[in-house]
Image 1 (cartoon, rainbow, N blue to C red):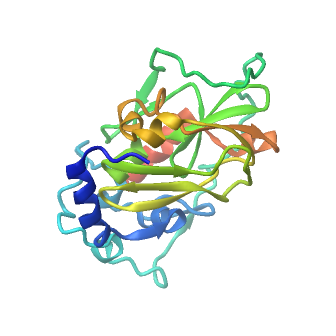
Image 2 (image 1 turned 120 degrees about the vertical axis):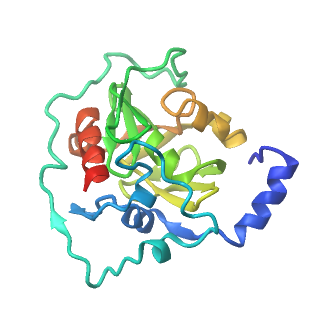
Length: 250
């Protein structure tokens, strides 16, 4: 594991007592992202966007738990089913190449599109889970995964990443690893089922790579799919952008 500097290590220890450690599902709920097909009301503080297009980070200067700031009462909150968010993708890009045992990311950045109302961008050459993870097929039955710029805005300043070991069998929505950051600690869940073939050791040693180039050198893992049909339940870049833009304006 890597800590950016001795100074940052000391700061991390101090922050650890104040950080709110939550599961990823709880985080998504507090961050106004859909869980189980339910769309929750957007909260500017936790959406990483605002109507003016600026990131909202100044309101939580005392490390106050987000649940306190939002004042959300889940027992009385009204939610709405939105069936337009998830749909089967009939055309999924699958490269006609063979997995050679090692993923080397491309040198060039992918084409990206902005999320309206946000300062974050979305790579258009891959699929997305609603939990802000991208999934890119790189060979038949093989995908590489990572997190989006939008997710990084939620976290702000990632300083520690841990991942499940290579050869570990995972199922969709099962535990994948942990991210520790300035705003919160998050438990990640797997966007697909399969076997982990490769971890990006570079981000384990230096999490800065994720923030520098989340869609290229900041990738997380390579996974051999055990159920390729799960790709049909993911979002295209267009649908991910459309939903995130909707969250901003609601």
